[in-house]
Length: 264
Ligand code: DGL
Image (cartoon, rainbow, N blue to C red; front, side):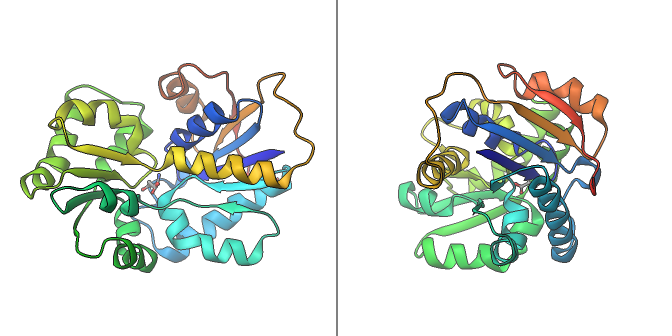
């Protein structure tokens, strides 16, 4: 079984990391659309078009389960993908539901892209799962820029985190939802800069569990893991940049990298 993943850039590698941790023998094929990053500032039509183009590429290269490792792309594209593609599609959305279940102050902060926060699907999510909870949203495009450059700590990161999170803390939020797959790469620093007792929610591990359960039900031929699966990470952007930052994003993982030539 080959699992394909896509994101606007390197952010979805935070999801790949969780899937590899849970399913080390699975073959993973990742495409980061860094040439078009960020999706957060793009129109729903453009986002959908990119997602379909990359999904076609992954399918053409043998993907059997597709993971949209991007909240923005899921919010604007998952319905259409599921309707048109003959394979299981796993999407992701900001963890509003788990956050609403654990807040004690009744206030949660949702960090996500502008496009995600504007999506109808996001509004439905809040309406359905956060009744009686105050949801404060905050786009963090700077986080995406930093992670795309492989900058995961240092003064610029501290500053960007404080700027985004201080207003949420001041409003009483005791749970921070990482509603964009780039943000978990900054989680170690976020945790250092928020008071103890404030929790952070990342839905990457839940997506990995969903993929594992799909694999268990879809495939009858999974042999016990004898060897590590092949991990191929491709980019539509600059390959040298990807090669430079991969060891910072996935320090413990053996990864092959390449250029994604869409249409081939
Ligand atoms: N990683 C993406 C997400 O989960 C989007 C970041 C961007 O391209 O703006 O929403």
